[in-house]
Amino acid sequence: MQKQDKISIIVPCHNEEEVLPLFLKEIEKIYEVMHAKHNVEMEYLFVDDGSADRTLMFLREQEAENPRVNYLSFSRNFGKEAAMFAGLEKASGDYVVIIDADLQDPPELIIEMYETLQTTDYDCVASRRVSRKGESKIRSFFARMFYKVIRKISKVNIMDGARDFRMMTRQMTDAVLSLREYNRFSKGIFAWVGFNTKWIPFENRNREAGTTKWSFWGLLVYAIDGILAFSTAPLALSAILGLAFCAIAIIMIFVIIWKTLAFGDKVAGWPSLACILCFTAGISMFCNGVIGLYVSKTYSEVKGRPQYILKDEKVKSQQKSLSEK
Image (cartoon, rainbow, N blue to C red; front, side):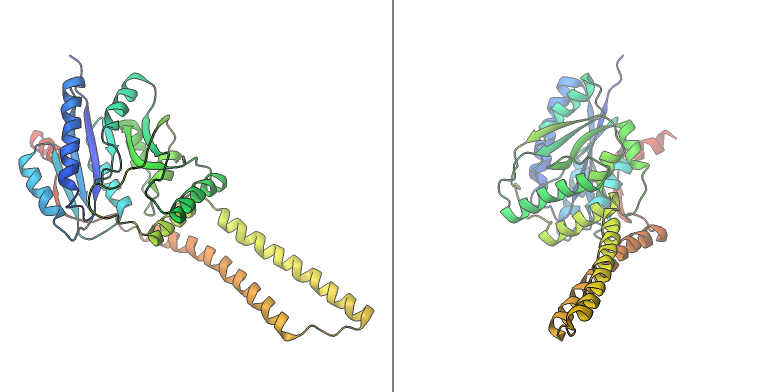
């Protein structure tokens, strides 16, 4: 008899009470199709990332009624990266899916992802947006620039428009979990561990309900974290700038000496000197800031604090395994 596959669906949630009923309705439709067509089982792992609304209350109600619903609840907001990591740790499926609750990621792609992994040698099927309809032009511009920059300065190839929405085999999931770093950038980690990945393009969708939790500033900080996590190019840049300005200073010293000896020119006035001092001081502070960012990341890693702290947890697969023991 053929083994029945199990798929774990990880859903990070932060103040998603408005969209969760819609999401659960859609994912249940996918389960019905998958169960009838491929005889697979599913578990939904909702990770409440310190929500301040009724997200946790809704998950508790659904967990009591739906055998596929499980939830984890953090003691405070630890961020989406921690939520995804927690879900990966608790997932027990043969295949693991990460998907947002806002329905911007098309749940129906899960069927295609599973069928691809069943019939090909791919280890992961991931999604990427091929359009950014509904986003501001400035936000779209910076997003595209980020992917171009990180591909050039790092050794990982992150696809333009890549989403966290993907399905992975158990082998790849375990490989991702083996990276225990505190400062996580999952898009880079997924690329770094390797494995064969197929990309499925889709058109951008707007949220079905609720509001986005990502501000422009939050995305900028997240992008900087990604660059620091997978590239040392900023450190090389600061070193190159330092050497360049030292060379320029030496050249200028010789130029001033030559002009003074040849033409008897006096030293230039204080306005130009003040501008030069401010410019070089700014470059120096920039380089120190780059070094400081790397030091701060190292400091976070050395402290060894946990990725998250659970306040409440109901995972049926774990309860079953404990009873079997």
